Amino acid sequence: MGSGRLWVRAAHTALSGGLMLGLFLHRTDLRKQEERGELLQPLIFVLLVLCSILLYFKVSLMDPGFVKAEEEEKADKSEEQSVEIPLVPSNIKLRRCGYCMVKQPMRAKHCQLCQHCVRRYDHHCPWIENCIGEKNHPFFIVFLSVQLVVLLWGGQVAWSGLYFEQSWEWLNHIFLLTSFLLIVIFSIVVVLLLISHLYLISCNTTTWEFMSHHRISYLRHSELENPFDQGVILNLWRFFCSCHLTAWEKIYFHRNNEPV
Image 1 (spheres, helix red, strand yellow):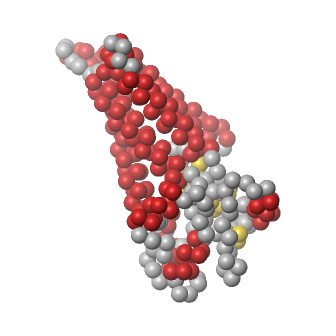
Image 2 (tube, rainbow, N blue to C red):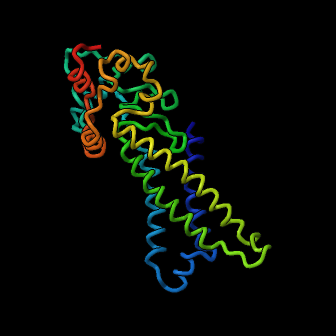
Image 3 (cartoon, rainbow, N blue to C red):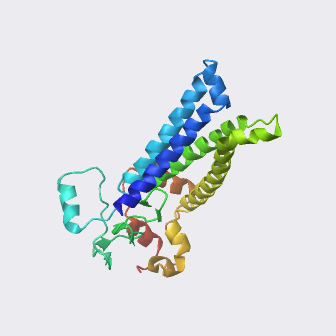
């Protein structure tokens, strides 16, 4: 498990760094600007690539919102650690996870790969080898956005180095051709991911809830199609600007007349 995660992260870093280095070694617009002493755009490009790699590791290594046992929660509260655990009204009973036996807040799900329950579980991403949950989901969106900018710019740079005065010259541009095709494929994937996530965020739902709506008890028994949807503006504000974890039970039971 650990070696698999290390391999994925190393591969992502090597691919990002290798593509960036290759674009500077070939006769692309960035290389020409560097040779002319116009360093602003090459420097910005390098910083964007480094920023995307740092964001990748941020999302990959951070706690996505693992649900802790009661003893750990009490210890965290007594030590006044970073993120305050939301209080659930005493009249609402939380179900226990059948795998790790912790009290599972609403919208949490147990991840078999991480062996933890995750708050506001969205999905387990094999690309970053971590769950996407309430704590790291906003950073995941920022990472996708920066990655898309890097890919689109990198695609333009790779294309700028492709010029064919003789029919055989394509052999000299195998790297740029391969890079351009990879960038196109990655860009399509990132665009689709970003659009789908932004749509779900605007509705205040998750990938797991969207895909498994008919199997999730608190959604099947709700009088509303989506009991957490509070309008696009408030949904986006809560997602990107809230500094605390949310007690989703309060919103759920406030908008539904009867508890599940």
